[in-house]
Structures are given as C-alpha cells and as structure tokens.
Length: 203
Image (cartoon, rainbow, N blue to C red):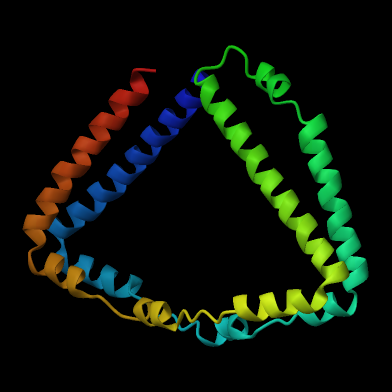
C-alpha cells in the first residue's frame, strides 16, 4: 500500500511540475508579448457544434416488448440467475478468507466495510431480481403497470443549452491586464515548480 501511495504522490508531483512549466511559459508570454497571447487565445477559442452528432441520444429504445413477449424465458432466467447468485453470496463467498489476502495492509477495516457493503448490495439485487423474475412468470400484467408508472422522460436540453454558451469574459479580463496576471502567473508557477522539484528530490 505504501508503494502505491508513493507512486501516486510521485505522479502528482510530475503533473504539478508540468503544469507549472506550462503556466510559466504562458505567463512569460503575457508579460513579454501580450499580442501574441491574444492571437494564441483566439486560435484556441473554437466553437464546435455537436447537436447533429448527439441526436441519436434523444431517440427512445423500446425493449419491453421483447421482454413481455418472452416473459416465461426471461422470468426463468432472471429468477434462476438470482438464486444462483444468492447461493454464492450466502454459502460460497467468504469475507474472512478474502480479508486474509490483505493481512498486513493498513486500513484493513476499510476493506472489510467495503466487502460487506458489496455483499449487502448484491443480496438486495439478488432478492430484487428473484421477485422480478417471479412477477414476469406469473404476473406480467402487474409488471407492465409498475413499469408504466416508473417510466419517465428526463430532458437534458437545459444542461446542453448551458454548455452552448460562450464565456469570453475571463480572456478579456486577462488580456486587458496582461502584466498583472502575467507576473501573478509567474510567481504561482515558480512556486509550483519549486515544490514539485523538492518533492521529487526528497524521494
């Protein structure tokens, strides 16, 4: 676990170093040549229209007709699979044996909580699948009524419209005061570079 944690910290330090170098370059560009920075900003400011590419996401896909036409087969499969899954969880899945594999690791109680939570969710899903399978076998009309009540159309157009909005205010403010933001970026980037290099050298 300590090895994984060390790798994660080293990766973060490298990422911060790269981020600091990029920030240093952009800040120098703002200080030395704000016109070039403005031209670079205009180059990267692109408006991409993806409405036509996402139209297929708004099409409903009907799968219930196949389910209710073969309700006996699907009900038996769902009930049988749920029983097999529940038997596995109750009689074959040994939490203590799996925890022994992590013996000696830190935060062992977290692994235990995670495993028991997974088992609990699996049992709930198994019982739910068994009940749904029985309903498909013996009460398909009831399943149709429940499904019709639970069917809901969720529109995401409001969120898509917000993503379509252009916000150029930040660029305008930065380019209006290039020296202020340039020197601020230089100091921030320098601090990030020094901290990341110090972290990498301390390993």
